[in-house]
Image (cartoon, rainbow, N blue to C red; front, side, top):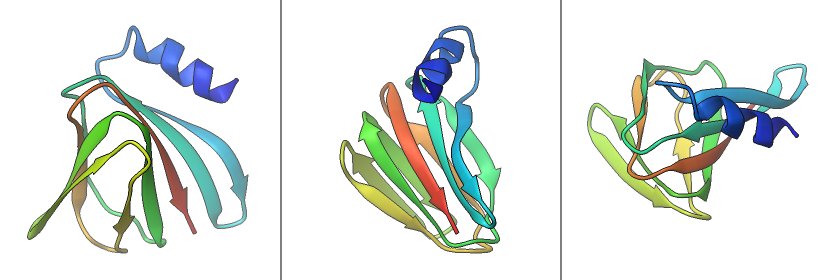
Length: 98
């Protein structure tokens, strides 16, 4: 139901919608819903992370690296690295941290 909640909120949103699916200690799983063209602005993580594309396609960008990921593909996100994520089409992703 959390994924459906995110998709419902996305209908009226002007920015990506993130919801926590599971959190235990420093381990966290989130779902992130995007409309085409939405950008998760520059940020960084202090924990190891990986983003999985469940549906759609994204561009993951760091200063010197750009990775395109499509349905069922993932991108490793290094700690303490400023990055952003742009939806190249309507997309649903899962982010795992920890």
